[in-house]
Image (cartoon, rainbow, N blue to C red; front, side, top):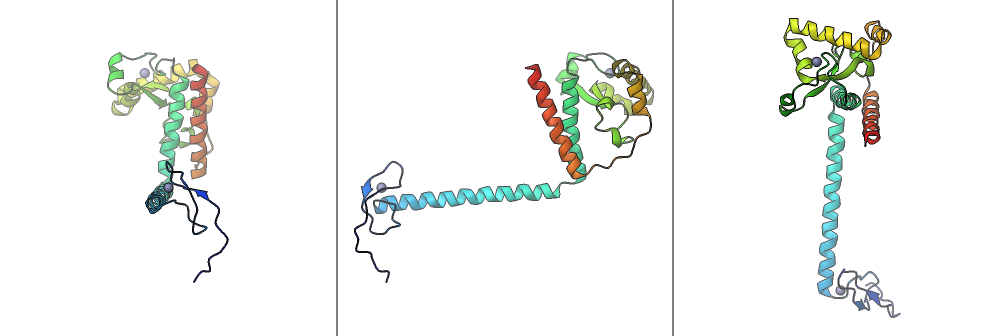
Length: 208
Ligand SMILES: [Zn+2]
Ligand SMILES: [Zn+2]
């Protein structure tokens, strides 16, 4: 038996929102004025527990997914953010290789512009996040270079000529010169993604 205090309890307010009745509890932990309110409170507590459990599960799933991501996935995410920045930076400029703004039909077929690399990411991974090496390019120009060798040559030549006009011979020489090989760690890639997200946001803020 739990000994009951013979001191009279102080009156409390019922915890059920919308009730708020004043009552004199018979136990110190009692938070409800009536059996009905007790049921309501119990239900609310259970609901709260259920919600926090669901929240914890979602968090755990997120952590697990994060662990399953490969360096390739992080590279893709960082590249997407970098490319978005390039398109924003060159927003008012024409295609780097042909100087055209493209036709409106291109726009209708889902996205007109790419961020096109001068020296390819495959052959020059160390230049995949180099701002001099990447410029706004029509998707049709960017996509055509691989498929048609003859057209590809003109696309590449056009890119090089217009790139020299845009950034100068010296900077093009740097791109075409020797570079240190680069291996990106997950931490590097996360940092690049965050950096370019912030830079794009800053550009957009400045334009607004
Ligand atoms: Zn009540
Ligand atoms: Zn072009």
